[in-house]
Each structure stands twice: as C-alpha cells, then as structure tokens.
Length: 178
Image (tube, rainbow, N blue to C red; front, side, top):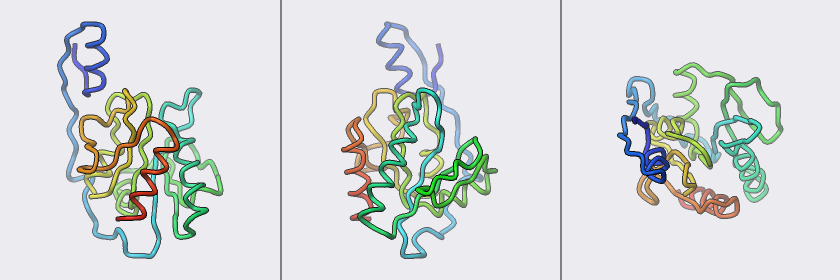
C-alpha cells in the first residue's frame, strides 16, 4: 500500500496495514517569494474556500477567525481562493476562483498568514505552497489534518489544539508578534 502522508500511514497502522509514503513533489518554479509581502500596513490572512457537505477543510473556522480578529484590528484582510464561484461574502476581501499558478503564487505572496484548520485530509497542499513563498502557516493537531509532514510547531508555523477557540488564539498570536 502506498500513501502520500504521515497521517494516512498512521490511519492504516491502526488496522495493522503496512504502507509506504510516497510524497508528491513541489515545483519550485511555480511557488516562490516575490518579496512583496508586508509592503503595506495591513495584516492579510488567507485560506482555502471549500464548502462541502461535511466541510472537512473547515472553511467556517477561517471565516469565523477572520470575523473575530477583524473586530479587534481594522487592518486585517481575508484573501481566499477556491474551485467555486465567488461566494460574495463581506468578510472576504479578495477571492479568486480557480486561480492559475501565477495567480496563486502572487496571492500567497500577498498573504501574511495562511489558515489551515483542516480536519480530514491526506496531504494538504495549499499550506505547502504558501510555505514556499515564505509565508506563515497556522494549522491544527487534528489527527488527519494533512500537515504533519511539514508543519512543526514554532518552527515552520504554529499548531493549535483541534478546537476553534485555540485556533483563533494561535492566529492572534501570529498577528500580534510577527
């Protein structure tokens, strides 16, 4: 059996099934720093907009986090992208539907902190792409977050407990002390 992440390997281990991790690569020609981050007085949060029936990506956590933190700091913006059309929510300051690689790279470079509260993922790719642009990531310790392969607390980003309150606290920590 082949899997693409630690969390999937751990899941199979629960059933005593041996597996091998084969990770997909990242194209360093697609995602890289543009040296445009922080050129304004805004704090830009980013996230994946993906509402599905079970919302395993937890888009609602991203929206709630932005809503709460925007009340504390008027300089916070929320940028998102997704596969669907623009949801036209007032909390989202910029949305790109199905961005091409160059649009995604520019968007990642505009964002200061990427919010990755996923609950059920194999290998969560957008935070990896964001990291290639030297942006900060906030994820969770959810068993199947899909970020265990690259997200290390206080080394490559911040990891919250698997609850919304602590997730918001970690995002606030990042924006309070860049």
